[in-house]
Image (cartoon, rainbow, N blue to C red; front, top):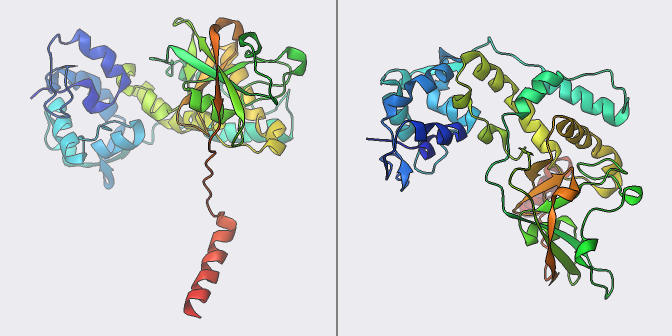
Length: 355
């Protein structure tokens, strides 16, 4: 039985397997078709450093459970715990190790997440330009290098709400001039970035239109060599297999929560009245990303199904000559009881039911 990279869900394995085999076919484990196939045991040297960052402990979890939780491995719909155990046993040539319980090794600890929480609070409410709390800039740059944006869309979209009966021209769909550029999720006021989305629907949702309004949508092409950082899902995108070193993998595991928190900074919903303050941490993050040589950052949309890109150098994007217009037919709203009030509301419902 042979396996493929999709069984594991590790991005690095997708680059490693072509150097191990030329055979293609249907995977015996996840049943994916037209995949590069390898004998599981040929991956043993890649997985042993990863296994070594966990220690046996009867109160722990199975290795495959840790792999799923820590690295989003075995995320294919067919790779349940049982199949994942069989595959990992064949990789390591050890049927016993996959039945034992483990815990992460205490050798690897990080305070990066705590320091970020302290820094973001100081940036927002204490010292914005000369904060006392400092991150390990060298370590953060190393971590960001593990998240290059790959397989990005060929086309991106930017929307603007049409004012009255006026339609926009393509040349009006870029970022605003510096003097009138307000603060955004990624940019400080006066430093315009180009915000684009992967679909017209997401780009329209990002400008928060009302039902019946017209939205102009421009299409942009961004060169494939553009260097982008991908913060959509760090746990899924980093590759412990690609690192290959036990100490580096252990340190990465201790920092993965920190990376996830950075991704959340660019996605968290922000109310307009608090945006000037709430955007400061994500602006700081994007300024650091730009300083590291990236041209933009990719992040999840908080209002649409697609993905967003904040481009630090708007001139990189090339607009197409055509502009499309859409009419907003419906704006969906989903609500959820606040934790502050939900318990009280439940009590009221119970009393009404009993009466």
